[in-house]
Amino acid sequence: MALTWTLTKSRRIGNLKMVTGTVAFDSSYPTGGEEVAVGDLGMVQDIEMISFGTAGGYVPTWDNTNSKIKVYYGNYDAADGVLIDVPNETNISALSAVPFIAFGR
Image (tube, rainbow, N blue to C red):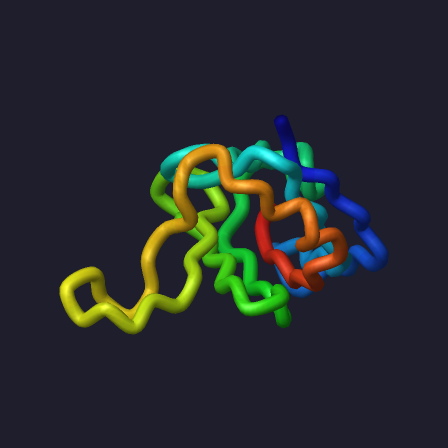
């Protein structure tokens, strides 16, 4: 499936564009993260970074190398580490209005 972006503000800061809004996840998170296209955020050239707010116990992060949002959850099993990637096809549609701020061109 796909992410649903709601863009609320857009401003220029020097040669960068700043966009704020919310993102909604769907019912089938893919292994390795959700792909993000520059056009999803109204960018033309690239996305420099995306930072996320509170996400119902999950931790979304921006993977700049692969242009994906990876979502982690807490795991207190020392063998796995503190945060692990949400498993393939997990329903995280309850994350329906995660705030974000993004910078790009």
